[in-house]
Image (cartoon, rainbow over all chains, first blue to last red; front, side, top):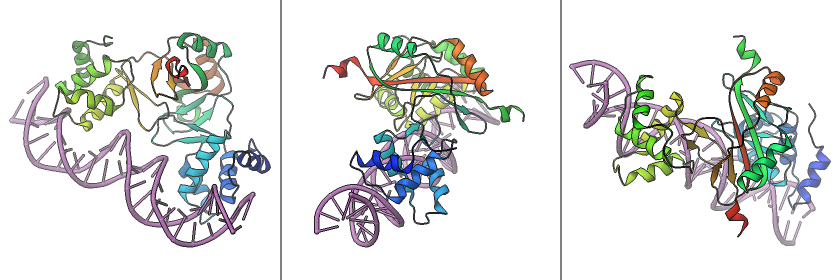
Length: 143
Length: 143
DNA sequence: CTTAGTGCAAAGCTTTTGCAATCCC
DNA sequence: GGGATTGCAAAAGCTTTGCACTAAG
């Protein structure tokens, strides 16, 4: 699985918003971008520890926060104790297995018309959306 | 705004699942059912304090957890620090104002067909879903 | 060289838990 | 009366913050 952005592109996105580029930030982005499991900050931290023994959890949190701010990551909230993160920022639904806890991407997209209906009904000026589905994944159905 | 269930119905729903009916639980349900603001546990606790001076926040949390378990309330997670709760449990989207923080109900429903598409694509056995929209509410647009 | 970032430990929050006293059934 | 529930305080997590040191530009 290759990350949505190459290191050079990450560098550009950070610099154009006034953030410095550090090995830690690139490492966090790389870890997030190379996986599809929608990891938590702790997951990423554990993953990086072997290659970056001095990495701290606080730095992972700070990096993720900045990524969300500059629009190269998004925060997910399926209702667990902790947030999960996703480097794929185009709008797409997520589905959460209530047995094993995994979170998968869903490619099927709701119609654009639905957003327009919501705008019309609520009068809100829409800035984003999240669709979460809950269920039992194929693997857990077999148990 | 009247609550989805009357006290007698709440009582029945609790008893049929083996839970006892207490004044505290009925009060928490009543507070939740009479509002449309999607309150947090803390909100409900503050609201009840004047009428129930001995109410504790822990009891509010425990009551809400049981309501979710027996299916007469649902937990919302718009990405804030805390959960919000809703006594209206039929599936409906929510919209969160990123300026003032309010959460409104959305009546427009995504097509049933969408769920079926998701089932087909993912192989998950669906048990639930949440749709969250984010934007700026009409009042905040005027500021 | 200047300013932002790192990493550690401590603090802050929300939510949960342990437990004695109390209340529902 | 027996067992669940309450309410308090303490604990448990996740996330943020303060601060001295370090590194990016």
